[in-house]
Image (cartoon, rainbow, N blue to C red; front, side, top):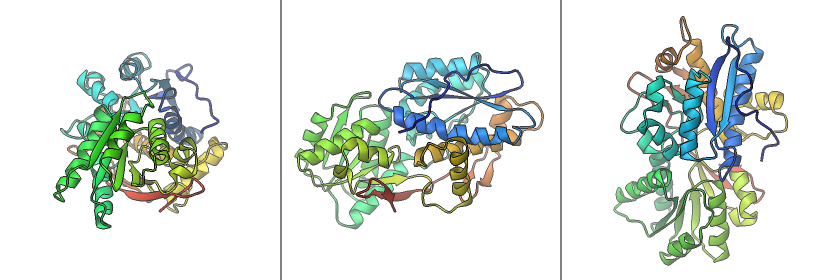
Length: 367
């Protein structure tokens, strides 16, 4: 958990500032994740401002708490675009939340790009839309990697625990598609409602299927509740989660050793053990601008997102505007320091990187 307090609303916005907006879940069931998301972007923007900003203009990172509520995501995004005059957005959470922005034409109305959303939901990737720049692999890619690993060692009875909304259904579809490629079907499935931690029915439903492996398409607190209850009922299947879960937090919330051995796919290199130039840079930024914070996959992902966004800002010739940033971002094809990102006018999927980690008995992750 973070020991940081973020200034919501960003305080006073100066005319010369370059405003980057972020609506994030700083309260509710996804609060710990939301704070990490904001942290990663913040420390990178702080480092850029310390170097003089962009052409002498500082980045004003305006953050608003949407509580993981779709209607708040929409309202606050409109506010960021219309009132705060954000030229770009970064690091939103929630497949359904972001899908609603697209449905209501919020990004299109302002011609504003969103960089590094914390979701791999396929509905945000297909069909192609020009406003979202993804720096992570999709849930379907993560599901394929997990199912490949399961079936490779003879675990063919696979169940899915998922959130009953666009996010969970996207992950569920990914697992079903990966199984279908191998002429397999789900052994069982169980869901919970967004914003709830009531997993009892899901555990019962999954237990009936006697799975050998369970894939969690869930956010932090309900995922921890599932692991705790499933193990309490002597569930013995191998449990895996997609990358939206922070391993050490899951370990703590689930009650320690019950989460030992849970697998988590990752869409960025290890922020703790990685030796890539950008990982070392990220850890140094944390030490300098958020010394009480610990490295995490979540904050590192959004650090990378902020780095991509700044790369776009640096490529703008002339006035910095949402339109100019969108056009500049689609020219980004670069190595950030051991993590490659490539966009084009017809491609918004910047990376397909996937790694697999396991929770150890000390609550840390190992490859």
